[in-house]
Length: 399
Image 1 (spheres, rainbow, N blue to C red):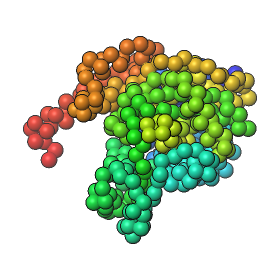
Image 2 (cartoon, rainbow, N blue to C red; image 1 turned 60 degrees about the horizontal axis):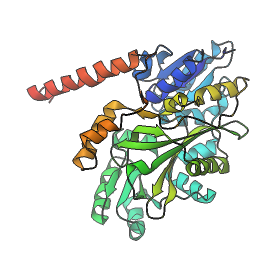
Image 3 (cartoon, rainbow, N blue to C red; image 1 turned 135 degrees about the vertical axis):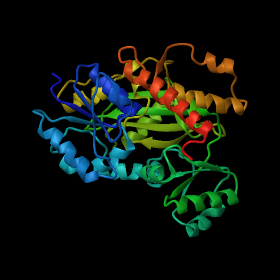
């Protein structure tokens, strides 16, 4: 019986997909976020505003405890946003008295949340990884200058801090020489962030893959799902705005090896890029939570949230080893922006872009059995608000 409430932290597309996967299985879902976004409008989710996870951590924990106290059975906790991950991990001893959850150890989360520690963790596990450097000030930057391969990519060493200081849109910067490196880090340090410098692995965006796994509390791999990026936004270093399910045993095995060697638990997603220089897969990053396109795995026959729920509530989760390949997932709004950039670079034509929509497609927010989230995003977020911004710009309002 599905008596335990599922509490999903984060109501962006990631949480929306988790809520749908659970709700369709007849599980009651409570979605929480500090802002009213797309998941609030799903028929499968009862959503509420909660305290901000990083600005009001104590209030958030108290809020979660009040929810659990009202339930006859322990709720099951799902984390779909980086913002919620560290506060929950820091307070896990208290949270675990009231909630059921399957998370990596605090040590693993700390290593993964700090991208340089994650790099060292991968090296220790024997997983191929791009050369990576970290600089916390200008003196440290000058000390490692001669070792840095150009071009290089600069991104946040700690994701939540980077987003709060640099903005959620800026995932990082490409630098081609020392001067650009120094100029970029001056801006980063002035804003109070820190930076990680990573070797750029050559190859097209379609060389990016994800190995997404669910490991039970005793370390058994119950699910392993592979996807390939078709397009990214921003191009080159963004999230997969169009991806497809793929069977790539070598890539899946490398992900499973990494998860197992570091003692990982719960749901996670390891991203790799195929290096065209040596035809080897290199780890780009590991995300210790549900990933944005998790609804695709459900569509293809692997319901990660349900497996997670069943394991924690005494159900009978069974290992699933097969899934459908060639199914595509797309965030249409980001993909349109991506198409424009690829076309400006001469990498895609309108005909090629339209052809990429052949076959079975699922949209990130719009599902036939749950139309409101997608329709609202289409009308309010992407038509009315954009039109409003254009009108304000035309009349010079808001300046």
